[in-house]
Image 1 (cartoon, rainbow, N blue to C red):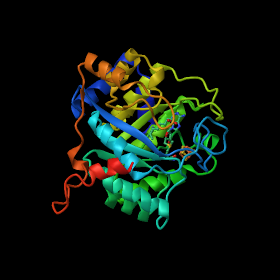
Image 2 (cartoon, rainbow, N blue to C red):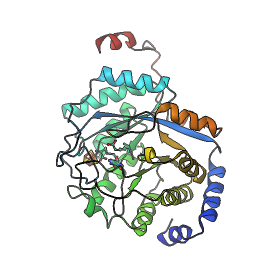
Image 3 (cartoon, rainbow, N blue to C red):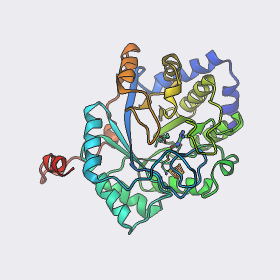
Image 4 (cartoon, rainbow, N blue to C red):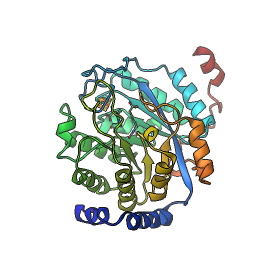
Length: 337
Ligand code: SAM
Ligand code: DTB
Ligand code: SF4
């Protein structure tokens, strides 16, 4: 969708905009379904990059204590618990600039993905930059979607990050698409950007071919110690408008109401769902920051008569190999953790 089209929609009176996005939503999605995704930070902190919103950058003095890559058995426990709690998508994040073929850590991550993908949930990873070779290997290991956000407009990006470029981000997204993985790509509201920056970001994301499978809309969670620690929160009506635009511009994407829900009332979240959000991160923690309690989310979903979405079968992990036992070493894994 062009900038001009996005801009005219954005200028509509609020009710007209959300009526339009609601109509697009109902044409493309069951009206009252929400996807539940669990996030796990498998490698926390100590990141070389200088993303000025991020508590995991080694360049800032934040509360995050750097950790090594988690052990596979611990990750499997968390993934199984996520499935038990009703999540249909398991997203693993790593505080890295990127991954490289031939390194031990990449091999370890592939090994983790292979096992997690056998649990039948959608498997999403966000590991930073990948080239064509890495993308191919991730796909083969069982990744269904790769999360790589553009975060803001091309123009505003250098004010936020200097250690990599907007084009680096776009190249990774191209490599992910060429390897046949779905792309999860969105941004953050509240980085000191203008409305124009937000619309430009959506213009770029909606121009991807194919369009992304999901679009996370994060609101900045100001993290103590980062350059963005004192940024003002985003007006909830701006969040709703951007969600409505994402729904209209990228009709078949899951629009994920992502970081920042702890600052949104139930009523504000309801408006976001009405405007077109149909996915959330579910679980008390995001990567390092807080997320609403599971019980609170389930109560809201119930109050609204919404139902959790089933995993997308087209993207489900490959069927288990008949020759192998069905629950590979489940008890062994639990015991070795
Ligand atoms: N290192 C990888 C990368 O940068 O792509 C993956 C992890 S990174 C933490 C994933 C995304 O989390 C970022 O692109 C950003 O959109 C979001 N994020 C990080 N810190 C945030 C914050 N304080 N508030 C809101 N969103 C945040
Ligand atoms: C995304 O767009 N949001 C998630 C996920 N993709 C990886 C991350 C949110 C991080 C919020 C800040 C934190 O937990 O440190
Ligand atoms: Fe590192 Fe990703 Fe955080 Fe940037 S957003 S500092 S690349 S973990």
